[in-house]
Image (cartoon, rainbow, N blue to C red; front, side, top):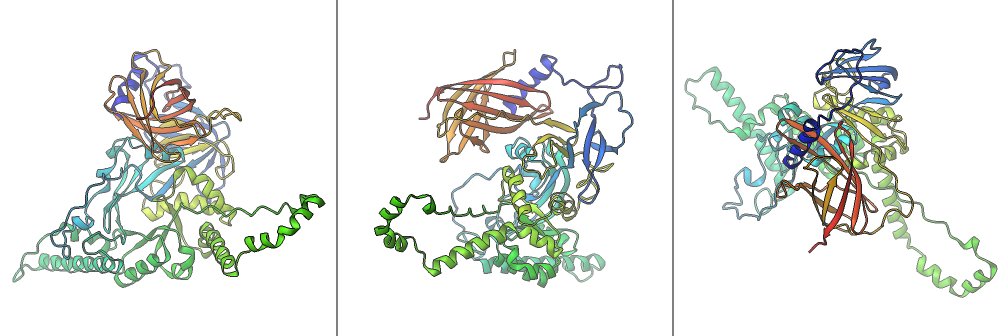
Length: 577
């Protein structure tokens, strides 16, 4: 975000504000890329025993794990305080860092029976990394949840393009990139007003393109061997984008949420023979026998339903005899009113079982010995810990849960050589939690992404009665940051977008027309938590901001990456129009 970038440069350099580094030498050194994390429980991998020791990071890579005898003179020392260090979680597939395209009026297609590839979302040659926005708020939101790496791909229908693996930090696209065009991403989404406008049409079009690409590739190979008597082949970049999956060099990541789609995609794969990853699977438990016999890998959805709450027990026993007698005359009417038909009872039971099966899907796959990871296309990163605990309560082991978040996803994405475990030579995407991660009240305290450190301060808990439930915070607020520099003021325009949903537009006073637009707001009572990444002039920084609102004022804390936490205040200037 350009508006905050100048502010941060002033804070960090204009005032000479730097992070304090502990060193084992009196020599004055420059700010270093060397980090030593001491006295920490190290979870190297799902299969390895936990060891207590240190982790040395240099130039964004893990250099030593376990017993580090002495720190380099220029190392930044982070005291682990017996916390737990994990390899950063890996998101098997999502639109993280890629904003939704602007809605446009549907245009009339001249020949709906034979539309252009682009008109119906067939752009397999498109590279998702080109759509990545380094300042998108979803990046810091993912990182805060411990998801430090994502397999990203663009929005779109049928064949939206090539997926890439990136680190979740506000780095430039080049610096964040781990694996470019590592996947062929696709779905069976239909087109509006043009072929293929039906599911059957989408399946037919998918197979048609594959076979056309296979024929084109075969012809090109024959032409290379002997050109005599052969017409020069016409290069088609759309068909050429399918060559790697025909050769088995690239996996097809197929979005297949429900059982019907899973069945259809498995039939396509069986017919054509490409390497398959079923992505964002919700109803895999319905297809367990087919999935067990399939060579496809799975990325199951983290968007799981809430378990049904147990019905409250009747308070009949707590009533006095007089109360019971007064209810006698109404008893028959009440029973008739409350009685459920057998059909309705059966429906409710099936619904309850379906929810339990959806939550228990991961446990079922573990028991079946099927490798799986997780995808975040629909799932919300803020629900990650809660949903994982629900899966564990349903029978998933913590070991399998950790593997799904680390080593399994790394293997499925083909990046096991650089990610997934805490080992020498791997990319330093790690996080530390105050307790073992899967414990109910564990909190992530530090995230380190390619050597960039972010400390996560615990939010101050509100006392009962402090939060103003139901408070509408929409309007324009003038904020001040408690930093003794001129550029410490600005505005936050808050727009209500739903019952309890808001959009924040944060701008500095110096650049009021260049706001950061933030849609991922966590609101608890009258306390708002939001994050974004500022970048520009070669700098990048994660910003975490908490504000406690009243009707006319707000107090809060703003954390600027690893450079500290500052007080903030705001007053309401205008109500919404």
